[in-house]
Length: 120
Image 1 (cartoon, helix red, strand yellow):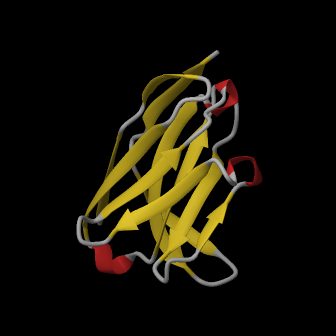
Image 2: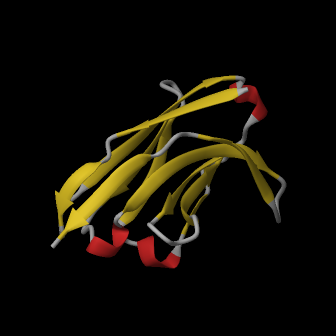
């Protein structure tokens, strides 16, 4: 089992920045990919960004250039730096972890989420 705990969400004005953190613990040998998803009210959960064990990253198109995913292996912590935030970025952000199989991946573990609210 892997436990994921997010932090860093909050209320921010449009154009501002936030850093989300995700502390991972447990059977970390069982995962080789971590990511951030988000879900706005009435919307489906969507991918924000993901990072595999080799360091390669993937971003949703609307986040490219504004968001950066990174990790600190020594601290078992995943980060999401969000810049130039827009009201449409308002959502609950979830940390997730799982296995990468190349063309597919499975996310088996999820945190409880952290709320990000961007006001104009």
